[in-house]
Image 1 (spheres, helix red, strand yellow):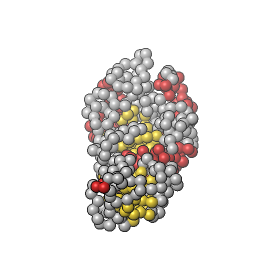
Image 2 (cartoon, one colour; image 1 turned 60 degrees about the vertical axis):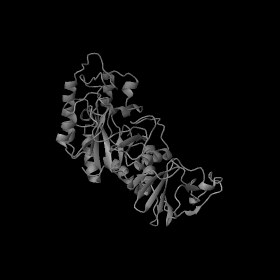
Image 3 (cartoon, one colour; image 1 turned 60 degrees about the horizontal axis):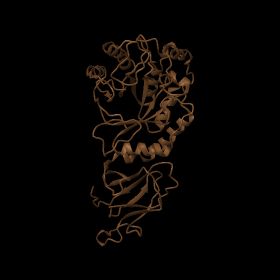
Image 4 (cartoon, one colour; image 1 turned 180 degrees about the horizontal axis):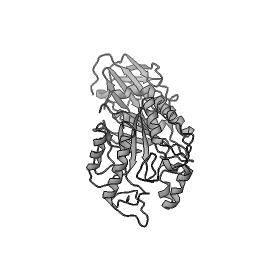
Length: 401
């Protein structure tokens, strides 16, 4: 199975992109199935270039792409024999998943597959125990039939598109059916499965749009966030997150030894919106410059808990996800002199000393008056748009953790 990959691109794409609103647009506006199905007749993403997607992800330091093969609306972005509501019956008429799979293979990226448990198009897809359900009159709750339908499609997904890195169930069914994950592993034994399926914790956890409390994750964890605040799919009037916010979020997850999926929602023609692509490029530039800091072990070392630390041998990395309010930084309780201090974001050396600063709150307490490592002239204003990481090369002297 190997080591889990650490940074990937999530892609939410389907016929809902035609509305420019949200991937759950049908649910938001109570659109009848018959009306929503008509979108299929207009879906023709002739500008789709999977090699461009792969290049964007790869240049950002990403190692895999997780693609939405079927979202809650039930529309399949792959060639399936088990519903006519799929990409082959659009004007485009080609298997998008196959094209993306081939591009990932050419570009050296792994491919992961997202698959929704709710299916608003399938007559037997209703599950009264779960959420995100949208049954219509005449629909029948038949869990066994739903499981069989899913297995048939999973067989297609896991036999027709090469090696798959992870399988991303969405919306837990709240029904214990271990045979579902067992079936997935029977087709691809090395695959990793998330925790949103059929009553099974799977192989990894999936916090969404949040950073869990605590230190190093106890199990493989893949956090996910979108470049926009409003939607995962294409939203015409999206409120895009700042680079500062996203780098901080990624930093906090990676310091805990978690993985991170950053999502984009392509437009109806297949292109990733330029603002979203620019965010991937800017976040990727930062990630490539500081990613060595994530190879270290997380350690709770500093008195200021807003500062996070990772350590690799004699190298200590200090992460500043919340930014600085001044150009100076005191790293209590470190009282040993490092060989060097660099700002990993651009490699510049920083001035430092072991001192007692005038504003030290312990100044009036004789027993607590001690010298600690202080960093001077940190270019906080220059890097206010991204998370700063300091690299301290130690001189063999022990720093207690």
